[in-house]
Length: 137
Image (cartoon, rainbow, N blue to C red; front, side):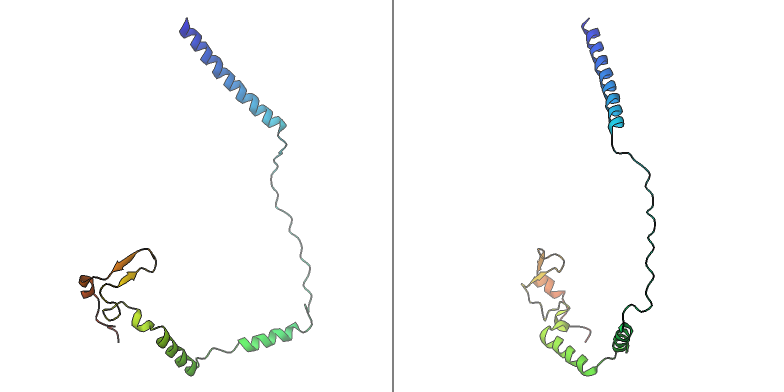
C-alpha cells in the first residue's frame, strides 16, 4: 500500500513538472514582445560626389610636402660617426652585449631579461665556462 502511494506521488510530480514546463513555454511564447524578424542588410548610402577642387591652394601644399619628403635618404657620414661614438662612450653596448669573464665577476647576479624575479649567481664553476673576452673582434 505504501509503495503504491509513493509510486503515484512520483508519477503526479513528474506529470506536474511536464505540464508546468509546457505552460511556461506557452506563456513565454504568447506574451513575448520580442518579435524576431530576419535582419536585412541596410541600404548603402550614396556618397556625395567629390568636388573637383576640395580646397583652394591644397594642391600647392601637397606638392611642397611631396617635394620635401621625396628625396632619397643619404647617410651623412659625420652624423653617423658621431652617433656611433656617443653609443660606445655612454652605453658600452659592444662590451656588455655578451656575457664574458671580463664583464661578469664571480658572485655577480645575472638577471634574466624576460623574468626579473629569476636570477642566476655566477659561481667559480660557471665562471670557467664563460669566454675570456669578445671572440669576434
